[in-house]
Image (cartoon, rainbow, N blue to C red; front, top):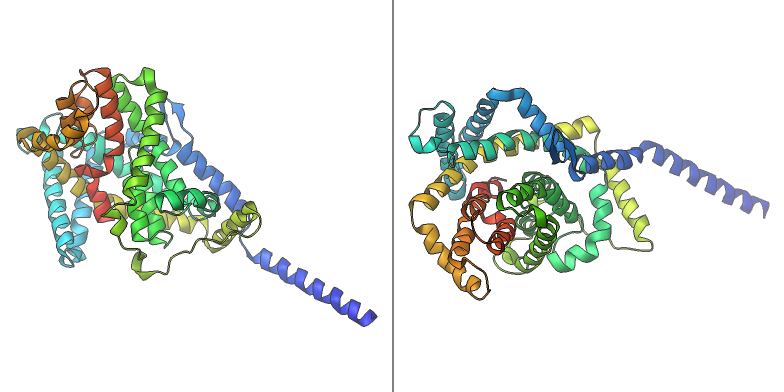
Length: 420
């Protein structure tokens, strides 16, 4: 009897020692709490500095641009030239027709960038709504914002936050949007931060095998949409700030409703369920017992797999720079081409007729103008706002909402999805 009891106690002691040594070899749990909290503060909590109310990542981006000052166009141009050269040097343009077309757009973007920065192009390039608009609203912000966001992303992705949130959000996200629970983080990052940051998260998580191709497509086209900070700019332009809360919440609801519908319709529903580079992908966790304990356990598993912060930052920064140089030249050329088509051809007017029957059934003023504004949002997300500044308030409100939910179709950013 005594011998049996002694063996039991010895076995328990050995088990405790093994557990102690196992825990000692695991990264400390503080990484999950501290890094995730700092990541949340960087991406999700807006605050005001010098009159600008935005998130920490955007404040850093603005500070860097202020320091670089008049050299900022040259920085953007260097990134455009690198992004144009890479597919040629790597010969990836030869792998498919799509890559060849995108490379040609990149070459065109490099030519436009050189002409604009060195002031040697045709006069149309220097009109306010063309070169200056594309460079100041897209090229220069994205060239800094994406790398800065990539660094901050190291804190948000990798130390367990996605897994923790995913366990809780899975019962909502999977049945409605056909995406994992962790995609809720993408949705919030895009709304509070920036669509480019949302895309950066999606791209990173997709390459890690946490999303398959169809899930990444749903998230990119449905959740990585125009940010709340850009919505403020639109609201100011259209005079909607007195109705800001109504505008914001209606847009939020409609965006998610539209995403829930399009996720179940072709062509998105027909997308492949394969994972990046043939990875097996992560399976959703079966909940046994407490959801909190399961969420925490999944967070700790991911925390244990993630390398040191320095290596994680470096890996994310490389991805961010790769994405930045990859998208800038094609965004510039496609955006410029889209603006030419919108302003010098009747194509947008013709396209507006597609929207007219749907608009006609609603008692809204300026229906023809609203149809054109809906069509022109395909070219660039800010153009509809400029088109209806003198229209009725109801028209401006509808344009503000439509611009928000149709963002993923506009040409000047479509290269983001194709390139990455």
